[in-house]
Length: 569
Image (cartoon, rainbow, N blue to C red; front, side):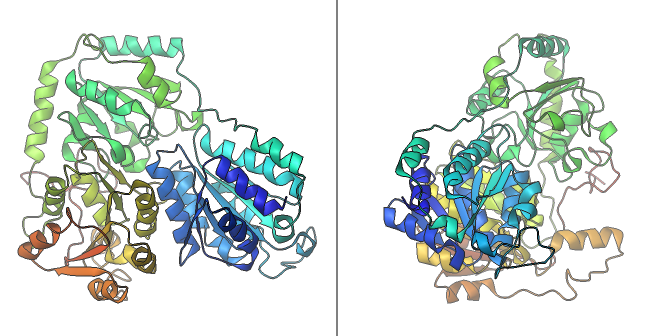
């Protein structure tokens, strides 16, 4: 059997049947084999970075239960995938990346030259630090075994991206049918990760017995755990409060005792809760500087800390914990069901204090602005509360405005570019999400971010997906402009000076997408009222000239609960 045909059959056997690509000479055999099966959904993008993000969107929607595939040809096609590979690496998303390579006899090998074949590039070496497994397959008989290793690695443990680099002559070579059948019938060897052990469980219970002001912090490592939603529902019923990191917030339903996002751009009530609890149980969060502030020693200053993470190297990293547990969050949720006596010393005044803090924080942080970001998201929360929605956010102030103000219902999710923080993430990722969900997807972007992969508006129009794009256009790279205001006396090189953006309304129309421009509150209500019943692509451009702040925020060096601007200042 032709190797590319065998690869196609293997991917079908493991439900990897959505492929995003930009065609090039070194992947034509693979694409032809995929197409000939009639069982692949092949989506041609306009840039390999977009292909990578779209594949990430498929895996995100599936909560890591399946992989998607992104492909690029040799040379620039391969290097263009790197940002998307890095995004999957940092946010623990399982994706398969396949790059075409020049024929094996055209490889430079050990010769001290830069390149032998046209567009030859050692992508395995380039991608090594951003993948769980990366290999060039130089023999056809190794193709399926290496693919088996790659998918096993991607889906197991702390999930992440894998890469296979396949020379052109290997793709078109023959593999013995008996070998193909052997590997088609060999199941993947996916290990989900370590379960929590009884000693750690007993130590955890003992600390809970002594706590009066407990708090849970949900991180990205918990967001896809099957038992999380039900477990948090019980926490709410028992009067146990919880917060989330940016990545944890992706799947946390906005119940009564959810205090929202913690961190440098976190909600005031969430940061106050962390700084005033006496026991903080951290589930799948790495506690980086965006979560703790720069003063890690002051983080949760009154609390004993329990950190639970699948990755042993994330434990005892920036923040000292009183109990470190290396285990999956799913095993924790199953082994530690919440009951009325889980915290026998629970101080009910704690809940009253948290309620007061939340009440005090329910203000419009932008009273002087013509259009308030908080009001935009409150309107979205109301209008879309009762229908399935996936939000996908780009990177910038608009991402933080969304994270501070979105309140998810049971049938909602939101997707953030976390560790990579990649502008240009949202539109192509939304395409991947929408292909899987068949429900509404709402993109939150800015004038800077949307321009990174704006060419995929054509892909969106071609596919006619139910994607709404909300472009918050402040005619600046606002988040960095805010840094310049704080640290460079407002000198705005490249955020205003030397920066420009077009009319996104006009560009969307040129791509055949209906669009509306919002300049005031009346326009905003009209445009947002279109979303719920709309089927198909729509772009809403909200003009927010001068809106370059995110409030509240943490200045570098400040304590987590000393956000700017201070209330009642």
